[in-house]
Structures are given as C-alpha cells and as structure tokens.
Image (cartoon, rainbow, N blue to C red):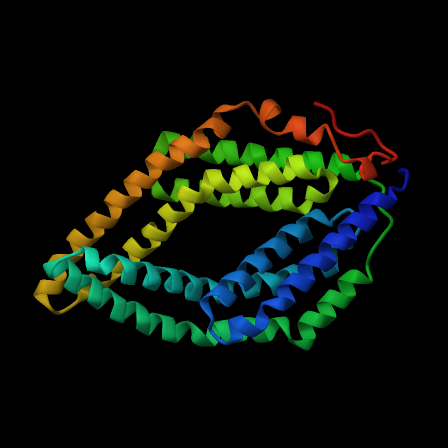
Length: 307
C-alpha cells in the first residue's frame, strides 16, 4: 500500500466542493433564460466535469460516474440555447453591415433562429431543474461520502494531468494543420479548453506562474473562440436556405461568404497568438511552471515533478 498523501485528499476535496458551489450559483439566472446565466451555468458544468476526472484518486468510481452523468445532462441541455443566444446576438450586430438580399437573408435567418431558441427553452429549464433536483443532490452526497485516503502524490498527479492535456492539444492542432478541416480545428478549440480547465483545477499548487500560464492560454484561444461562433452562425444560416422567398435564397450565399471571410481573418490571428505557444516544445512551455510549486505544497511526501 502506498504512503498516504493528505495533500491530495484535501486539495481535490476542496476543488470538488468549489466546483459544486459555483454550479449552484448560476441556476437562477439560467432558469430565467438570461444568456449570461445560461453561459455561466454551462461553463460551470464543464469545469465540474473536468474536476470529476481529476478527483479519481480519492473518490470512488461508481458515485463519481453517477454524478458525472447528471452534470453531462446539464451541459447538453444548455448547448443548443447557448449556441443560438450567441448566434442571434452576433447576427443582429452584423446585419447592418450587409445590404440588399444578404440583409434580407440575415433577417430571415434571425426569424428562424428565434423560433429554434424558443423551442430550446424547455431544455434550459430541465437543465436548471436537474441541478436543484433530489437525484442530483443525492448523487453529490454519495460522492462526497465516498472519499478514500489518497496514496498518490498530488504534485505528480497535477503534472501528469497537465502534460497529458498539453500533448492532446498539440496532437489535435497538428491534425488540423494537416487537414485544414473545420471539425479538426473545432477539436483543437476543445483541446485548448480542456487544457485550461485542468490547469485551473491545479492552480492552487503553483500560484502566480500558473495564473499567468492560464491567462496566456486564454489569450491564445480567444480568436479561435470567435472563429467558432462565426462557424456555428454560418451553419445556422445555411440551414435556413430553404426559404421560399427567392430574394432571401439569393442572399444566403453572400451572407455565408461574408462570414467565412471573417473566419479566415480570425484564423490568421489565431496562428499569430497560438503559434508561439504551439511552436514551443512542451518541456519549455509548461514544465518550468510545474517544477516550482508554491511553498505550502512543498511538503508533499512524494517527489515533486522536475523540469
């Protein structure tokens, strides 16, 4: 049996409680159909799922899996509404820049998306109700009561998890670089988020250097997030191409082309901002941060990671 590391139990237990508390804070606004509230609840659910992956060393599998299924349902339930909230807001801002058939196509697409957004309201309510449900709270209680002694080094756990996600990001980016397919770039965006979430999970062990690293990651993926918003909007617009008005039909390709030009400019920006990080070998990019945990974590009964 390994040496018990009290640090891993305390730190991961604190992480789990913090993520659960944050999730609960955003339910009221989400239930009120507030776009920011829906966004915040969805992000909180994703961060909680990331935490559930990291607490494996000290919480039992069955209750962890049961809660994860509940949280995943929350994420899914908010997905369509969040996409439409962003797309509708974005198209309303962009519509005045178009003229003639393209503007009429934008107006038509907004009507179609507004109808889809209204249809997504029950899913948002169900997601908010799920967080407040007895089933969800029982799943939380079962998980918290399943805590076990931690026999793995917290710092080694942090290092391995972060390096694993960094490698996954580099692999996803290399695949997109070869294919230039939208879906592969979308997966690169997701890999960026997962790396950021896992870094946030362990930031308390590394202090300011990790905070700066997270900030740099967020900056590197900002253009990619904007690109994805335009990609989703473009796809909604193309889905509305069945309009019966010939003028609207004529304007949809022009509108979609305008969005794709903006997407192309954002990809150039992404290459500039993320290129430096992705061109830097992993050892140089992240291990210097992992090799210097802050003082209160230096008494881990196992060897800390080294550069």
